[in-house]
Image 1 (spheres, helix red, strand yellow):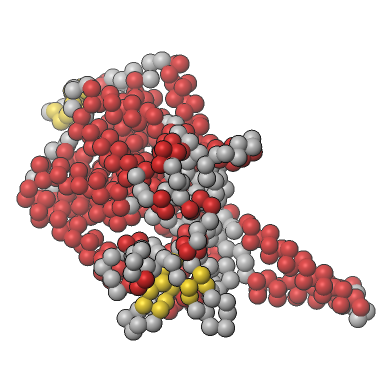
Image 2: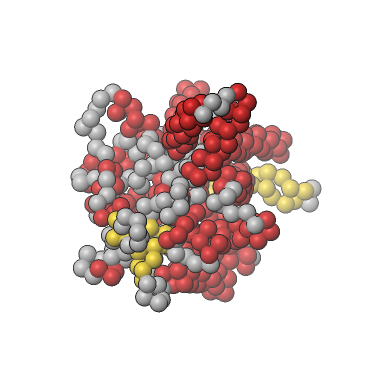
Length: 529
């Protein structure tokens, strides 16, 4: 049931204590995962190679009559020497995040966006790279990721490198894990706090609000991806900041310049991290124009222009082109096909691009119908892996159907602030989130064959992660509606438990979802890739 006005302040204080506990647990789990992160497959390979080298060395030493402490000391030296030369273990779990790490290293250590030398080092290889000429006409390899995010992330690494002389090559764990905390965990704390403020304002019951924050802290894949460098966490954080500022303007009637500037800046940043977020940005821009033409032109637009200049500017500096790498996939012009190439490595064997003949899931799903099924309710399903999102779409429907929705707000009186009930129209918010969600999902389902790959080797359909804060806000009316029924609360808890299971299952986010692994275990070999 709704929190009554007379007890609202006390109840809110208790709820914030619960939010604090949920956030603290989530942060602790992410930190534990980051401090434990390691490329385990390379760890096993390294151990096997070290074991073989030590066995061979021991055999030779014993043949020379060396025994006891001298033998142990020499074997220890041999192990240290082999490990220093192999250097196979890294806290970087896939070609995807190594692509960005390579750019960060190249910028700071070599002053270039070209990653030829970095990716050739043991343990730093990646398939997410392109080849094209630089300004002098020479061919080089570059990350296929838009360079703005890596450029921003290079700043803290530059500071570490300049002050200590350490590099990611020499100290991958100390620097890599520290930067992951800086880039992922700390911003996610901001994300949680802003979401909690939205949940407080747009929720009506203790149960609904606490449930929404439980979903935010444990029921999404953002925590899962905190152990790797990625664009999905920054996109989700930008989305919640944009939403917060836009709702302050739209529903609260705030007209301060800072809210328009924040909405413009972070809305644009959301787009540069996730292209389909352009639909969200466009909807917010229209809302800002409706609220205030003046503030939109003088605050919102300049903030957008700043991001656009940074995005296209870094892209031009890196690639001598205004178009990002993913727009250079010409089927007719070899110079404009940056993905399919052979790279001459001199005395070493030529490097043939992985994308010349992609394997497995990267070949794309031939059937669009099968792809749609798997994206929605199948192996990478939005609703099969994270069924709690069903409540989000139910909440959108509730807000759309009901013109006036009861809500509580603080009102200033001569005796101080009191909580009063009001009837509000949430249809605009539900329409925004619903339309943006449909556009984003349809965009990916309707992609050509080579792009219908579920996001590659990944534990969920990662291209919709940025929608998490929008969906958490819209699940509030559905969660509130279940507050009076124990049966419905249990059902909600089951949906949350299933979502948390999916998010906690992968030790490495760049691995198959549990649904696919279970299907393979059961011998369902006909399951689409």
